[in-house]
Length: 93
Image (cartoon, rainbow, N blue to C red; front, side):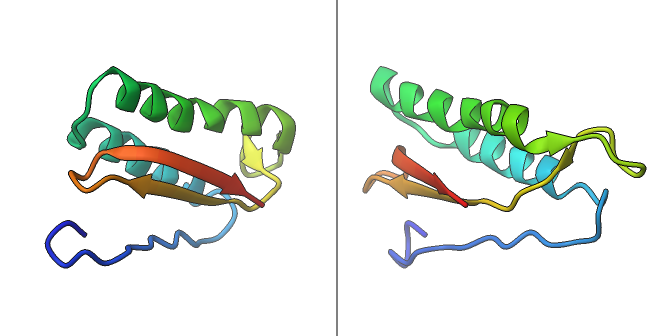
């Protein structure tokens, strides 16, 4: 991403209960840990990471296969600065 200055995309798919939501959380958490930045960037990271529990509270439900099943799809876009730090983001359904 930084070397080639190209946008990147991660698509997570799988059967019900396969761990797609957890995988997405791990990816966003990893990006948060490895990217730099000061207090303003940390605020952006916190908002992005804290959006998951908020969305889950409205869109998750218990099913036979998964006690915390996502009942919706989402597209998370993270915007990065020139130094690789997250400077914004957007979640859409």
